[in-house]
Image (cartoon, rainbow, N blue to C red):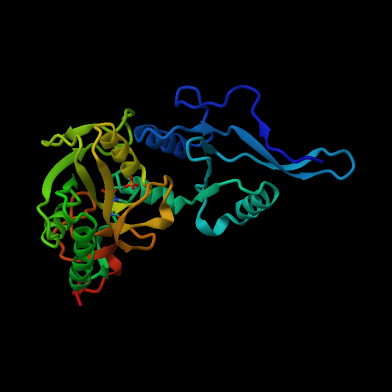
Length: 311
Ligand code: IMP
């Protein structure tokens, strides 16, 4: 018996107006994808997982919530707690075995809440005060890494005058420190882009554009952190359209585990685990940017009275 996913008979919904979402969180997720210009389809395919041995009837099937055609990626959103998804895990495992090469990612409730919380959307209990917890990267670790990154960029761009483009506001500390470690005549410029605000639809907008013309220039995008990769992908596309000679990307932090959209990063400061972090430019609801280290965020009640100590 040939095993193929079943296509929906009508074209699958690919806009908020057309889709009938089973859950509010799916609609919110679709809005987020729209915002970053990532095309999606809602439940376009059903993957039969078990057939009746006698008559071939489908006994069990799985329809992932989203398909992102440009990335050839299925996404299943689960609002269940991480420990309660054993059955989904089993189905996804079966799907991967039966349909090799199918790219599917499960987003847990926790992933989803952090995704929204980072845009300041009220998923974090207002009663629960958050504060910097454990120091993940100390200021001396940052300093050492800046030396290495600066040397690498200096080598790679020898004889050229790269234009460093920082994306505000999170990049401030990193940009200011990194450029002092590059032994080349660099130019700098900044850009502010809107971030997702939940209730509004629409797309990424440039709130403050570059002051320099980048046509024919060697551009290095400097980012604080790459998480899902959606911001970066959008930005790279936007800048490529202005026909620079080259575009590369340097990010202080890379949260690999949470990537939804693949965009190459040429220079990475640190790969970090799937944790929400603050400090050294990064904020939580505009706070903690001025910490000289990168720390995780914890409910205040769980933190030692003296707070985190740098090494
Ligand atoms: P992405 O589009 O999901 O890759 O998100 C990138 C942007 O989200 C970054 O430029 C940050 O402004 C913000 N962000 C992502 N993760 C964190 C975090 O752990 N702490 C603070 N801001 C974050």
